[in-house]
Length: 277
Image (cartoon, rainbow, N blue to C red; front, side, top):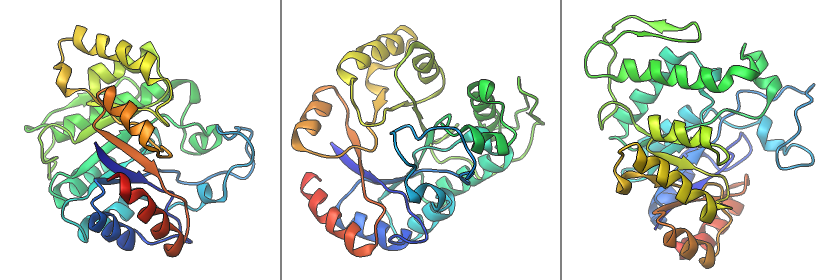
């Protein structure tokens, strides 16, 4: 099993360059970074984990800038977002960012896609909360048009379109980078995964014994290669039993949660996690 990591990198934590070098030196498979452009102080949206929203949420670095630094100082380390809030982006500009990072890293980028949980953050981006899922997938389809090998126009369902255009570079593997959808198990999410993604990025990995067979059934019913489905438990706190469980379910990658600490704290945890690599 490949062991990757995620962390809330901020202006107070270990730097992307130092972390990426240390991850690659220890044999970790990848680094995934979350995204929040800002956290409005006046908000009614509760923190999904309960209690007060941790300090790091309002201080995290832009994931694409941080991953660009990580790409520049590594050769093998996978680079990903966990997750990109596509609805909060201009899709034409985001398509360029993603394709550039994937090109410069030699095809090491994974696009984790999510819908978000913070209504106030989304509202500041002009996102109607009730339609954010439709908006996310419409913008993803527009980006795919820009990544297509030939100039391809796209007329969206949510008011955005793009003319047939020259848009280079392209994702290295062709068509799109690796795409994983985040979100809670359910028929709507699974239908989207089957239609538009390479797999699922469930937070924590709880409940996979029950939900994964349902996803696999939908995947195979759509005629997709059973061996191609990728399920990547995300933000996991590790132990050997979890990894054995994930492997038994057919998962070949898990993403461990690192603390949003300074260099000393993060490297101490990395040394502890390295025994699972």
